[in-house]
Amino acid sequence: MMMPIPNGVLTGLNLKELREKNHFTHQELADCLHVTLQATYRWEKGIIPKLDNLAFLAKLYHVTIDDLLVYDYVLITA
Picture (cartoon, rainbow, N blue to C red):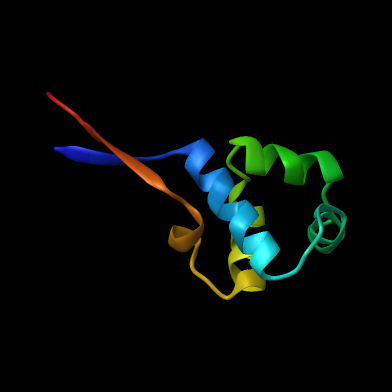
């Protein structure tokens, strides 16, 4: 069975692309989400945001949470 596992690095690149496409600076994004500036940098470097932040980002960028995440698929054997 193949199981999807979020890839932090590729998700981070996706988050950066969406932020830039929507013309947000790191500081503007941090202010919108009420998080630290460092948190926005960490997300783009590979740390997956918490679910509530993912939901807000999805709404802000007019995409689904699945559109934010990039998955690797791993084979699970029993």
